[in-house]
Amino acid sequence: RPCPTSEPPSPQGPPPLFPSSVAMSDNGGGEGSGSNRAVAVDDALERVGFGFGQYLILANMGVSLFGEGMQLVVVYYLGETLHQDLACSDFLVAWVDTAILAGLGVGCFIGGSCSDIFGRKPTLQVANLFAAILGVASAFVPSCWVLLVVRFFLGTFMGAFIPASIALVLETTPVAYRDTAAIAIPIALGACGKITVAALAD
Image (cartoon, rainbow, N blue to C red; front, side, top):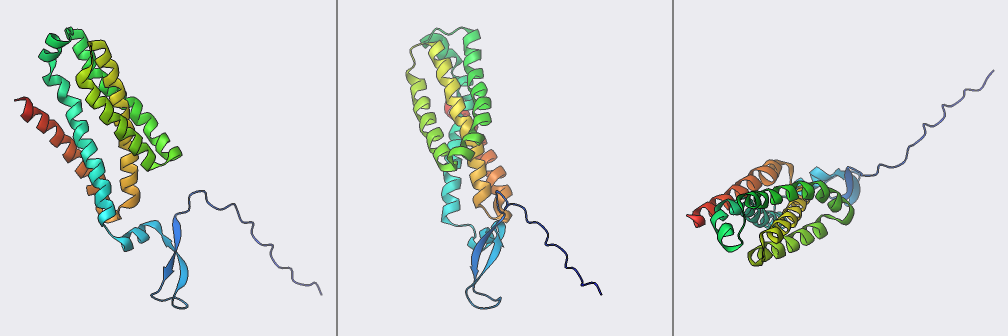
């Protein structure tokens, strides 16, 4: 009489590179108090809630996006000043206005990769620091060509801030608040920056 053969165990693949759950202490049930179980990251964020840490992240993103909104439109109101103080032609004034947008495109392209490689916080710190320095330097440039270069790199660091800040907000905010935190607030603060420049110019 042949002996029954057991099925071979199914092979197990390598562990996932980015696990979607974390181990947390479950004191509310299970086999006993204090037992560990896997909890999804979104569930963990729901337990933590929306608090001081999230407000701090939103404040950092909001101030930067407010300033970015101002920088994007300020040259529109400085055309006459650029003609008089730096002797810029209409052609160069148009390119100065375009340079920051070109920099934004480059910065958004590299900002996400930098935040993945070096981390969200270092990327945001470097981007904010150099954007502040270049923003102040724009007021002291000696020529229109130098202003064009400074505005391009200003846009680059401003663009690098965008994907890193949005990723950080999405990764640390409970699901119920993500649409407001990552979409509504940035759009509103960017618009407020543009409105502020228009009000000051008038």
